[in-house]
Length: 280
Image (cartoon, rainbow, N blue to C red):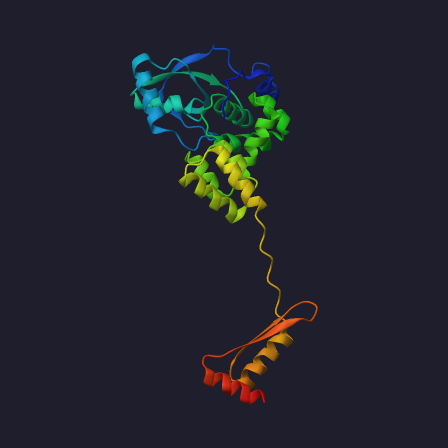
């Protein structure tokens, strides 16, 4: 999803009940990197090793310009925001990094971690969807309130949340960048096996979003197979009786309205003569 970075605005402050939702740059200190541990509320599930290595190289050359945000937990510190920078700083062999130390409760940590990641565009579409879902559930927010908190439109938030309705196999294709958001939105019109099968075909054939949308329309407009009529037990019994009496394969094709066909199969003229003799 293409979007620009946005300021936290009143969204985070509203969630935290604090007009100074984020630190204004004061209270920055150098902390030993080994005393900092990952946050419990980190919404990221994957980090691109190549991008992490690039960031580590930049930090090694220029230092860590932007502080991470932490809070005191036990005898150390827990990350609230900036885990990717912290990991890259470790790769760059930094012993200390600049950090803003905040005194915030768990609920505020959830909001800050989710919003920081969402607005930095560090999350995949599915990670962002899961982060938004958690933000909405943790704070009992409407889609509109969540959208205001993270600087997104309500429609964008609703579209992201719909990704969580995809089949697990399809979500996996999106997560591994074999399908894009546009593909995923189109596939939401299908469900179950049909959705998974078309998603895999789109990924394998590298369809564009428009090609995927067209395939979905074709799948939706295809005539559905009519369920087979249940056999009449009386017709079945009659068919078995005739087969035994004539010593031949008999099929009764009974239609609505009383019409139908009686089909007697034979393998040779001699067998046909035998059937005719039994009928006479």
